[in-house]
Length: 147
Image (cartoon, rainbow, N blue to C red):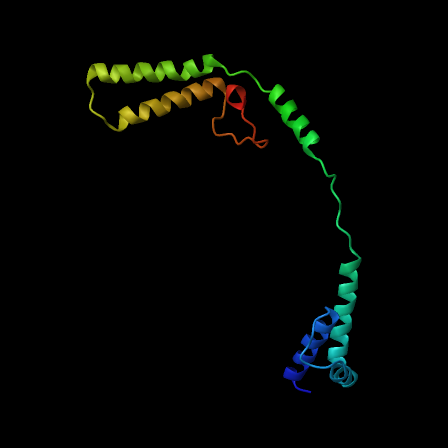
């Protein structure tokens, strides 16, 4: 048997197993399977696989999951810390003061005039021992923004 014939028989046998019409008749498929051991083995493997797949059942989830989701959201929003205006002022006042000083001195823009605010924020974050770039794994908003 040629590879082309075997492939046609396998496709036809799978189509019949799926309940579809095939280009070859059942008698042609059976006579080929009687002669060709490779096709017989492959068709048997396909049947076993189909039986395993059809015996599997999906895990059923409860129909209404909203009460559990709502409880978790409520618990997260109740446990958030209030927004701290003092921390915001700790950043805003030095930056505002620096900008006013630069305007009063009428200093032209330079690398240092852009670098000093960044260094100022690094010092403040170091003082607070806070990481402004920390990734929040719970994906929750903190403080006033979460309401």
